[in-house]
Length: 123
Image: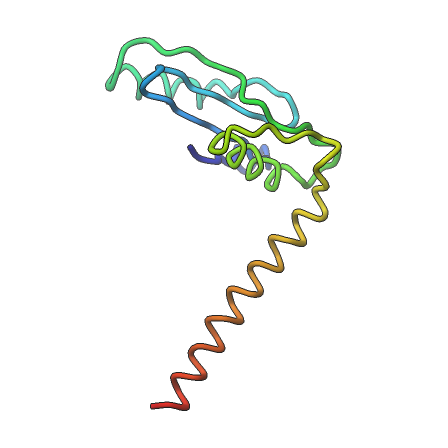
């Protein structure tokens, strides 16, 4: 499972899930675009070296209604793929998700900074 940035000319994040057991590649794009040819060719080559033919599957992902929430939507798609839960658009607010991610990052940094200061004072 991974996220993939489509590059400098196509600033967009997508989700890729490889299942070697079922020989499937699941592709999720919040703009509902097809998998780019160069990604498909790369995975075809990888599968040819590690397995036989594979099937391409559409990964369920929330649809993007703006120009900036693709990153958070791929995160939700990966979480859904792991948990088996399918998020519904009415229960998801991209702006709230960005704020939660930011708060988690701030708390992580504050915890690390606080720990370092405590260690400095005790040394």
